[in-house]
Each structure stands twice: as C-alpha cells, then as structure tokens.
Image (cartoon, rainbow, N blue to C red; front, side):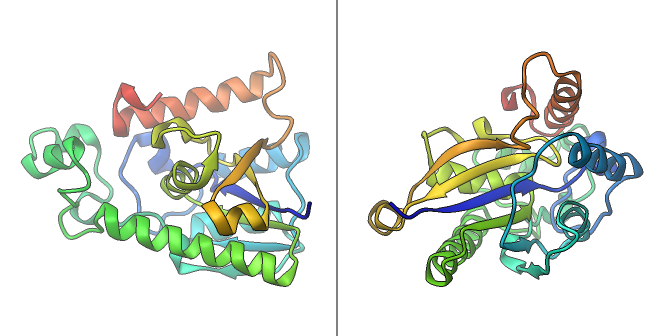
Length: 233
C-alpha cells in the first residue's frame, strides 16, 4: 500500500533554549554551540532524505534546514512558526512566578492566552491546518519524503493530534536537532487523519549507551524544566 513519510525536525539549539526563556515569535539565531552540534549530529548520524523541505519562517529553523539539507530548496511556511508568547517573550518562568495571568495560563492555557500573544486555540488551528495542507500536497504530488523544520511546540501539537501510537502533548517533547518520522497512508489519512510515528530522527542517535544522545537529552530536559517545570519530563 502506498504511503508518504513526513519528517518533523526541531531547530538547533539557541541560547534562549539553554536559559529556559519563552521564545516563540522572537526571531533568535542558533547559538554557536547549536550550529556545531547540528553539524556534529549530521556527520555522525543519519537524517532522512527529503524530496521537499519546509521550514518555519524564523531564522533558527531556516538555518537548521540549510545545515541539514544544503542541496534542497527550502519552502518557507509561516504556519509552521512557534506560538507567540506575547508579553512573556524572552522571559523565564521564574521571572513570571508572581504574574497572575501567567499562573492562570499554566493552569489552563486554553482559557488564558498569553498577554498580547496567541491563544492555544488559534495556535493549534494554524499549525494543524498547515500540516494537513502539506500532507495533502505530498499525496497529490506523490512526494515520498517531506522534511519539516519547525519548533518544539509545533511538533508536540502535531504528534498529539495525529500521531499513532497515541500520546499526550508533553510525551512528544523532542531534543534540538531531533524529531520524529510519520508514515501517512492516504486511505487512513482521509478517514481518520492519523499517521504512524515509526522512527526517531536521527534514526541511529538513540543506540544503546550513546553518550552524545544522553548529553543532548540532558540539555533538553534541563531547558524544559526551566520553562515548564518537572512535569514536562
């Protein structure tokens, strides 16, 4: 049965990631360490091939796409941008611990959007609609492998909505420069809008006792804890 592969890859490391800052719409660059780490990942491990590459319009994603897929044309898709955190952009959870609106957002992000930012409903609608268009284009044009370079929040939203096996939003947390591959079968997609999450990216990064993998995982856990708290592990 014919199927199509969509490869979701998170951008490389930024200073904001390490600092635990809320960075959504702010256009920060990859850190020097982030560039080197991406280059090392690419040289040591295997990234999926891509017949077409999409990227969020933010520079951290565009530069990641150019590092991982230097020979491919990059299609910029604004719907793949991270959530806009409004007045909380560039701030840490610790800095906002006494902000009542921030605490209300943590308690129920669906009913308490960031000040001046994007509501969870608007963000999810934008991201899901964009992804569905990409999948439908892949099927229509018979594009076997599509790479999407985007953000952690986008990837978690997409996999929580469409990924099989089913898992909650924070269970899909992903390291910088890493991601997941989804296999879409047209008949199943048309009926149920689901895809099989069949591999991690890079495919051989998680081999047993790999020190590089453990180091990156520790970094992403540390940054995520700073932003979201220990429940995000």
